[in-house]
Amino acid sequence: MAQVLEFKLPDLGEGLTEAEIVRWLVEVGDVVAIDQPVVEVETAKAMVEVPCPYGGVVTARFGEEGTELPVGAPLITVAVGERPAPGAGDTGTGDTGSRGSGNVLVGYGTSEAPARRRRVRRERPVSGTSATAGQTGGPAAVNGRTDAAAAPVNAQAPGPATTVDRQAGGAATTVNGQGGGLVTEDGPVPVISPLVRRLARQNGLDLRELTGSGPDGLILRADVEYALRAAGQGVTASPAEPHPGLPQTSAPSPSMASSAAAPGEIRTPLKGIRGAVADKLARSRREIPDATCWVDADATELMRARTAMNAAGGPKISLLALLARICTAALARFPELNSTVDAQAREIVRFDQVHLGFAAQTERGLVVPVVRDAHARDAESLTAEFARLTEAGRTGTLTPAELTGGTFTLNNYGVFGVDGSTPIINHPEAAMLGVGRIVPKPWVHEGELAVRQVVQLSLTFDHRVCDGGVAGGFLRYVADCVEQPAVLLRTL
Image (cartoon, rainbow, N blue to C red; front, side, top):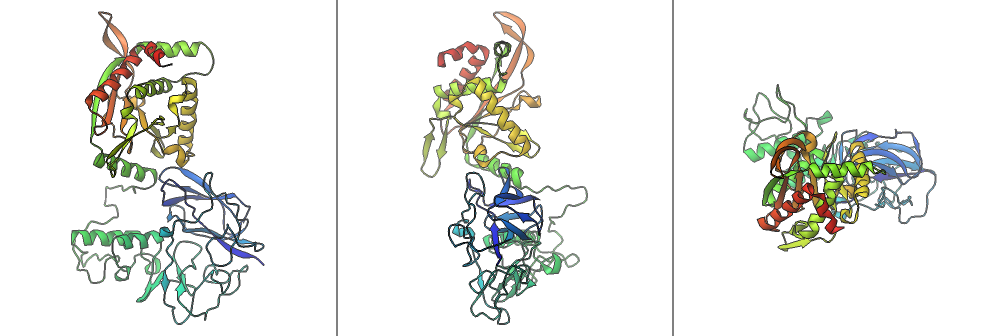
């Protein structure tokens, strides 16, 4: 007999707690094989395809495209043809376990989300019945009915009800086959998303005091955010334009701004990569006392050296690779800048390896891929790795591991046609080297005025890890290597 298994959004690692559904790769009724990708999701770090560890028929999908789901939320249910012995593949849908492949994502297994993310709400029965889908009494009921592949649920089972029966088209919880969301001791609370419940819980907002503006009175995220803003500013909605998301006892006020766009406004949600970048930059500004120094350098000889390398045959060497090689040589001389600050322990943590991040602008936003062990690579290897990671960034296939763990960042903003910048440090790193455009400028060379290829270099550093002497020494060494590439021969 077929068994219905629930596949949940796996823990994607790197501290990620939620993901946005970008594109469904299967429809309800499709037959899927073990490890077949079923959905493409976007996290704060990358877009990834999530394979399902079970093979069978898709009986339900949870969440529309564009919906954000927390780790541990259900993605799909699959009716499999037989019941394997319970074991490591248990999905947490009751006593009916199933052994999956274990290959949810490369580098991550089909582990359950941490306990703190998997809260099962226990409520009193409604009208003396129980909606315990997936418990010992029988297989899970899907969409408020018994699926052809599942046995009926015992509606008279005693004990508290566990709200795990969900509608196929979205994230709204159902009880006794009725769409109504979460049931509490004081009655039903219609909630469309686990994110909405979490947002309300984290801010101490009682959802029972709200009336939702969604279909059938469902409480939307906008309702909760509106109510939180009203509570934070001590204002309420006006009688002429009452907002259904506010508590019923609230007195109205016309001064409350709506989350909807006013005429002439375009609002873009800060989520996905854009939201992650915003959070990281804001944290960097809050926590890091940064300072910037800069210098102009004559890059004529560096450009000639690159031309000579590429004329000698073999793979072409990129300018970014030469600058990266200069960075790693400079960090060997000034290791204070290849570090981070442990604020809680009040310690500076210095790294032996240089994992070099480089800023790359993509259609999905700014990403900083990381070249592992850059200090151990030559210019040819660096060129190849930069090309690979840049292409992965453009196509959105960078993995979380390729976007984390950097110890120093190289930012070539010269590609945008600008000379200088004071970039924000890529938290939790301690420094970033910025490189402007290389352009012909008048320059005094060997005592005479000449037209030379000039570049502006800037170093933004965490003043906690070093003083200006170290930062100035690092930047001056980089400039010397740019002006006289032969200086690098001392470190080869």
